[in-house]
Image (cartoon, rainbow, N blue to C red; front, top):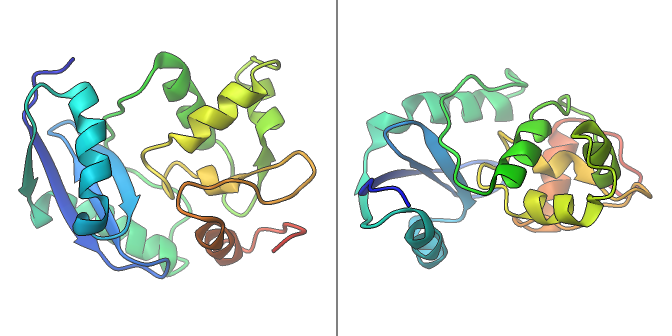
Length: 176
């Protein structure tokens, strides 16, 4: 368990609704759909798993690059992100989350594709669980992961947001 005590945050509007951004001194660690008021309880529970003593600190300046890059993404001016990250999860989850970054903009992959990529072909369900726990959605594009039959399945932000993001990227998915 880390001894860090500050979790910085800021909020921004986006085409998929309000986003709350969280970071440590090392980098971005979460993006949550909704305002701070909407997500504070969930994020507090998450933070208690990884920090001894957490104090939420509003710091808009810390998120200038993140917000700029997200705005560029939503304006069709960016399809990849160049930011510092600070991940909290199991080694397996981190491995899956990093594999998400390799899914090209505008394309989709199945959970089975991710399993094969990380050389864990029998771990499809575990990969689904890790994808569901992805703390940095949009940037680590779990919205690009679909069912093996091409169907849109599960998204922590809701299937409506998943559809919006895939439509924004002009991804071809049968159920859009």
